[in-house]
Length: 304
Image (cartoon, rainbow, N blue to C red; front, side, top):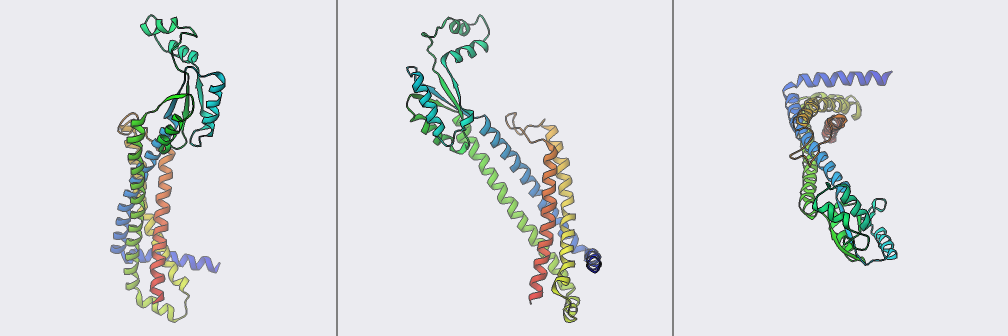
């Protein structure tokens, strides 16, 4: 019960301190809000870019064409070699024979067209098509290296993949991910700095009060607790606006662009529960940054 009473008094003391130093508290809240809004934007962008990269990894495939003269045994040997390549998903290797490719072409081609008539006239012996292995990679950044390895496999005559997407778009999105992460870390550090300075000014304003508490033997923990709670409140209040902006703003953008970013090729994450996860992270960042920043500042002062 005593611990509960002490904690309750500290909460009241923290709230009073916020209103007593309202201008400083307001400045800290505003700065926290601005930085967390930018953090939210960086997180939303980073998450969507990450999702797009994952989608690419699942859809981009490599087609390895088999030598027309390869025997059944040699074709099976090729599959064994493919299974040895670490970056290839072993459960997603697909083999298509010449006849299978011909049947699929006929199925997807309108009748009475030149292509349909040519394919219909082909026999097993006269079929000039090449059998192929279709493989999916685990890491899209290693796709070029995987292609080079495939080219060295015996009885593989050529390898094709969408090199323009892999070589141009993927590095761009990976760079965006890294920049977003740096922005998030930098802004969190800025938020800590702002709250530390606000609490530092509050400490200077209450310096005499703190010194008296130390003289009468009050423990450092009891002295630090109200400031930590104050920082916690400042961080939570500062995260409210970014949470509203995140949920409302992202939903509006998603609806306006019909779930696509820039082009139909880039699909956005659905607002729910995605924005709720981001909101939870923002609330946690605000609370922890405020509390840790305040606690650290008071701790330094008490060491003097």
